[in-house]
Length: 101
Image 1 (cartoon, helix red, strand yellow):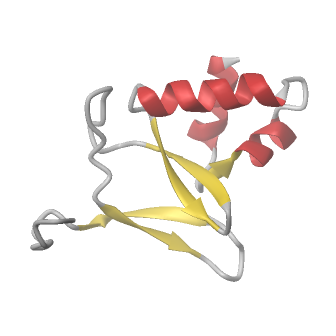
Image 2: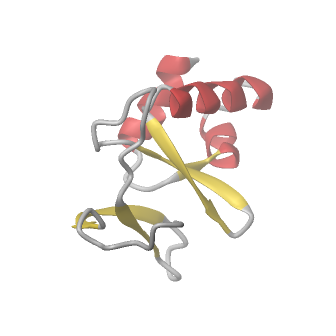
């Protein structure tokens, strides 16, 4: 199942939700997909973002691992196609955030 979920992410140019994966992988059950997503997120393979009361997941490509996620980039939500994509070329590494953030 993990290989099927990974393949789905590798083939998708945009974010995927749990519902998207259920649709793509009809032979799987929701709890197995959810546990797979949580495992992938914990291991630094994907990162989740909240969007319209749904968590969308994207592959990490910022050298993330179990200890830390380096997801310092924008996510773009298209109101026409309703898809989310990463804008990794826009970085927040040099933005001076206040100390309490």
